[in-house]
Length: 106
Image 1 (cartoon, rainbow, N blue to C red):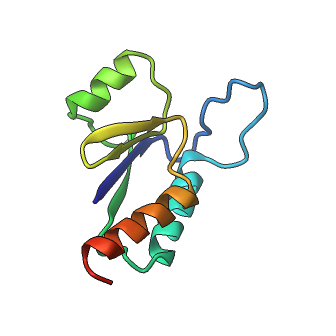
Image 2: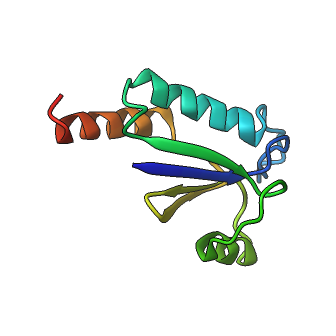
């Protein structure tokens, strides 16, 4: 499984409720990465944070999403845009770990 998180390292996600988020996009990614590592299948789940301010983005899926006004962070899982403005939850990671363990016979 390949997970790519597109965001801005030191910025907070847009919040519609008027409240201020407590974590930057990179801090959110770090928590996600920690959950992946906890499931002990980090070799089966490749994940990366791509800062759109620091890297040139060529992926048409991401460029189209940004042109359409999607909010960062964007989460792409195995080539499919799955989340905007949030990251997968620990429960999502846990479910994926169980699925991967079943697929590799653990």
